[in-house]
Picture 1 (cartoon, helix red, strand yellow):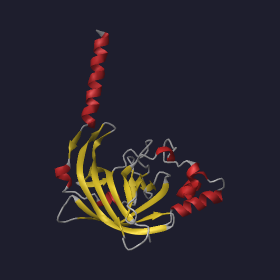
Picture 2 (spheres, rainbow, N blue to C red):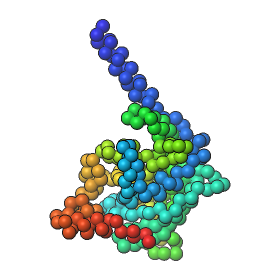
Picture 3 (cartoon, rainbow, N blue to C red):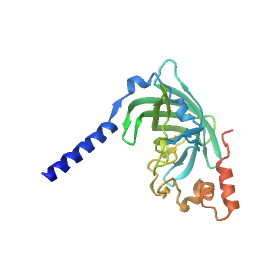
Picture 4 (cartoon, rainbow, N blue to C red):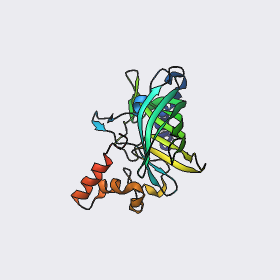
Length: 249
């Protein structure tokens, strides 16, 4: 009888957590909201109401994990189609900086409550990305793939979901896709995200936070590594200074 009692108790607890974590379809409702601020946010608010500066997305291109930079200059909701957003920005690989524009289209969305944060409604939007670098310039191409945008609903607005900021592996705005050269038609894997990069293989050796393997030091990760593990204070400060440069201006 004792065993049966504990089994029933366990099943009750699991079912309670499952109910709290259950997500509902939010696609028909998300058209009434605006996700642009999540993509262009300069700060985030943690679950203990601390305001922090949000770093730029981190990314890579190609099988050798060459560093890929992307910055969203503007994200504007389409008045004629509430699921579409016109995006303008710039990309950077090595010292090559190129402008791009294109469309982000919401394909699905969910909302629900998490057992760890039961007082907040939160969810994800799965978005199709079609970005196009300037064809008139060299070393340009298109970027296509899928981005997952995490949000919370606060006072009838969608805000950047940073509730689990202090947990290992925290990330948001994760993109998985390909960059394809206009000139050659060759495609390269191109992924990025806030705080972590999806499917980053052995590039990311960090446990609690993103940490690039030193063997990729010369693949564009030099200053990122120095900002974290500089052998001297001078090295660390140089790394932080370079990482904070607004290269898109």
